[in-house]
Length: 272
Image (cartoon, rainbow, N blue to C red):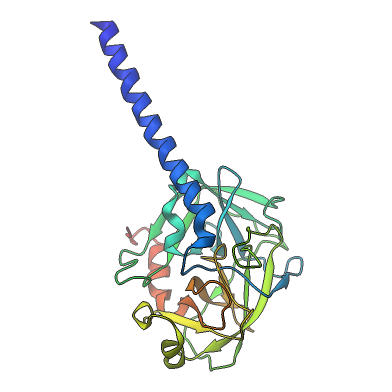
């Protein structure tokens, strides 16, 4: 009887481990296939970022040393990113800070939980925001600093904005290890709606940028920061048409989601 009980327990543990391995394999396969999916986001047409030029930028990595998404430090235990970046279970995620090369981190922090907007993808590509909480407080220094959140959207068409990230620098390419930056231009919502492939994907919680063909975003920079001239976080990379095809890139508006963000950073903030 004891042998039978032990055998059953062993089989249950083995099945559970097999399911987890299968999940990891599927997630890794999806990460590698993202370059062939649309809409996605990555920096195209940019240049190497200056050392310490984006101290709020983090790489969200998995425990298999793969870059998953970008994110922004907004407090010493909180990272703002895109909801679609959290398909990986939090136990497989790490936060890399303080470096322009995520393979040579200034520091690495484990994740204990995340808060995802409950209306993510309701409708499609809307409410694509999430918060990640680190197990230990992030230590600030010259290359690791939080960024202020935008309180309102006062931008006008043509205003200059900076995007940073580790996405591939050409269509169907691999993620780069050296942080890239590019100057983009704000595009009014009405103009953006007339230029994107599907205006139903665009909502009040989005802002857009558009410069020219060959400059823009694609996969690998999802969740990363869009920053204005005052070094204020105005956008979170959501989606665009791969890659830098001369059509708008779309970001979650930080000002629009500010109340949700600040509430989620408190114990009273319950998310999905």
